[in-house]
Every structure is written in structure tokens, then in C-alpha cells.
Image 1: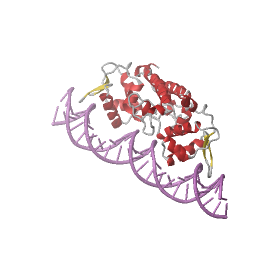
Image 2: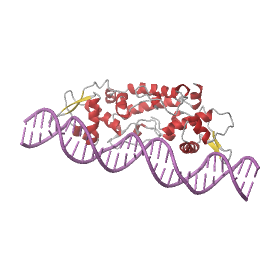
Image 3: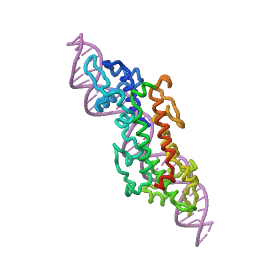
Image 4: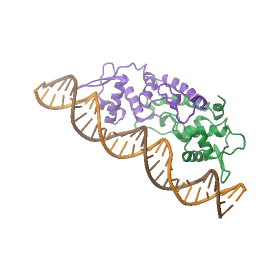
Length: 137
Length: 137
DNA sequence: GCTAAACTCTACTAATTTTATAGAATTAAT
DNA sequence: ATTAATTCTATAAAATTAGTAGAGTTTAGC
């Protein structure tokens, strides 16, 4: 399941992607439009900025805007930024790999290969969904 | 990601499925074999029993054994029993549906249809993995 | 019947993560 | 200067997860 943070991030990106070129959106504007607690959204937008999905203008008249094309921002990108691994266990993860310490040797693990299969299919599905494709539907 | 509980449940089922017909496995035996804290495993086995995946024999010489065919126990079954919904948000879930309270109307939600697509693909993948198929690999 | 060894059940605790909130600091337009 | 926005750090409240404790129940075997 997605955390609220990831859901809010996606909703914020969807809002930004729907604005006309050059529009700079204030946090309060996004928060009210997408029903997100404003102070929580501030943190989320900062993380999206650090992840190079959005950028900001400071000071009066400041705000946030997309800097990555909405066609190239996928569900898996945002999931990884806020919720981490796509895989069901770290031992089956590409980007967040960690061995299980309850397994003696990974080769003997009956679970891992199955979980890798799941991750491959889920990841393919998540990479197929972009901010742009969500808006089109 | 799977909780430890779900991972332990799967490992316990894998252990039981590998025993010869008629064998009754003690909790301590499964715990040691699969590296699971014994008291935690007790709870997990009880939940698996309530879910009709295993049954138990009480008293001395008691223990647990599979009652559902290993060919029909899927990853999605066990995920749902311990970790709940397969979908990324409750509004996209089949078995754990709940509306989001930050959406005005569900029809206007740009996220939901995409998440339903993901759920369909992930679920298909998870239904394809059974306890039996994990043992074969 | 008694004892040993297993499952059963309820409650509790400790740690972690999630979901925020608070408030001071910084930046920039007017 | 003033106003209104982002930025940053710290904190708090709530929920979830992971695990423990201990009493109760059941059954095999002597």
C-alpha cells in the first residue's frame, strides 16, 4: 500500500502537470485543491524538489512548478522516492537490496525467486503509468 | 513490502508443504528450521489455522499440518490474510475497498484507474505463484 | 489419575514508522 | 520596511509492527 505521503505527492504532481506552462503554484493553492494538510505538503514538495521532479521560486510570488516532463514521471519513481522498494522483500529489490538475516544462504531461499518475478511484473506495470497517462484517462 | 509476519507465514507453509504426507510438525521444529521467533510463530500458525490453510493436533505429539493443497495456496492469499489489500490504495482494492476521504468524488480521481491497472497486474502475478511452484523452482 | 509436552488465548510491551505540527530563518517583490 | 512565500529543524501524537509473557487447555503415555 502507498503511504499518504506518496499519495499526496502524486496528487500534487498531477495538479502541477495540469497547470499551463509557466504557472507557479503556491503550496497553499495545491494543498486546498488536492485536500492535503499544508505543512505536510511543504515537506513533500521539498522532497520532490530534492528528487528533481519539481523546482521552486522563493519569496513573494514564489511557488512550485514541474521540471521533469510529465511523460517521464512514473508511478515507480514516486513510489521509490517516498515508500522505497517496489519488491515485496529487500532481498528481491533492485534499488533497495538487502539480504534477509533469517536466511542462511540466498540460493536456498524458496521465496526469493518468486518475489523477483512479482517485482518484475509489478515494476513493468508501474513504469507504464506516468503522470501524463493518468491525466489522459 | 511484506511484513515479517507474512514472510514468516510463507516460510512456515513452505516447510509444512515439504514434509511427507501425515507428518505433524511442532511449532518449535518449524521455528528452528525457518529461523522464526517461536512465540511469534505460534500466533502466525493460529492465524493460518483460522484461515483454513493448516490444521493442528493438540496435546503431546501435537503440531501443525497443511490442509489446503500446496497447488492452491497463492501468494495473494497469504498477503491478504496478514497484510491485507494487494492494491496500492483502498479505493483500488477488490477485497479491502474503502473510499478515500480526500477525494470529492471517486469518478474525478485521476489516480484510481491507474492504481486499478496496477492491482490487476500485480494480483495476476501473485495468483500465479503458489507454495508448490515455489518449491519446484 | 498424573505428568509432560504440545497447542490456545489474551494481554501487554517495546520499537519503529507514519502523519503530521510548530516555529524560526531565509528569500524576493513591491 | 513590509509582506508573503519557501526552507529548515525539531518535535509530538498516533498507529502499526514485532515480539514477549504467562495462564489455560488438550492429549499421549506411564
